[in-house]
Figure (cartoon, rainbow, N blue to C red):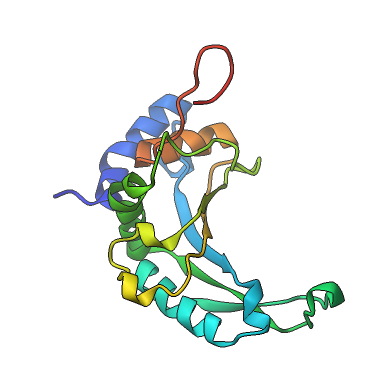
Length: 187
């Protein structure tokens, strides 16, 4: 079976070069990294939440996540600068492609009432962020391990310079974007 990384190298690069009119293959956009980010506001009051979600995120991504800390104090949230408020895992290389394959082939089809991922997550610079509402769509995470359903963000960082180029890259990699319906609205 061909891996997604091999498919990118052998097929997608040539397709992108043709579609974008790029003559130099090194100038073709590529996926630089995938960042999986979880915000845990309740971690300020309960430290066990951080450990629990850290082990869940490690199972999902295949690597131990980093703890993210508050940059400044916000008194209305009872938050001090330096408090642990989330987790993130940055995936590159083989782990990135393995996670992407798992996301596209197994996790996304398990989302209820799925009609495609939205196109509004682009940032204008060729990066795309996808929000996942529950971690239970990943089958390698046993239900006994999940204490509370939590959502997280998956950010696809590309070397593309525009959202159009990044969307073409991510579509060729296999992300199922919503289809545009005649009349302007998304379905």
